Image (cartoon, rainbow, N blue to C red):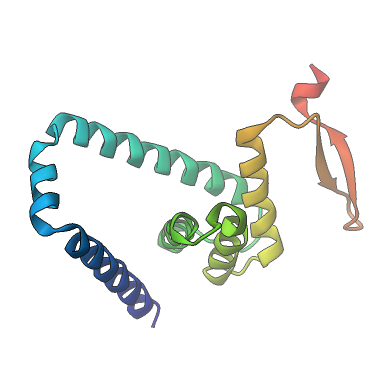
Length: 152
């Protein structure tokens, strides 16, 4: 069933791309592709794939301590689907955390909240350095502890 949904998602994406290309004009699109510098296209593709792989690696490492988190192909599929949906959904930057966490939770045994926390921390850590980090004690209540960068 899951593979069928993935195939349906790609089919819809290709259909929408075909409609956009048709609306622009096949000749104009083909002409633009022919004029493009292959080295720049390859460089952009390599840079994009590297950025995506590094972002996935960060999320994967942050999910490491989460019990039952998605691993392997389940993680890759959920991460890429979440990243894609964040890119194409209106206000995707705002709802991207929830969508990605939902997809990761659906592909694993870990709760939605743990996945959302990991995605949120990753987003925060890439934009700023917190002076303290939330931590959970044995009772499950959260307290604030200084981060390693604040101690130095």
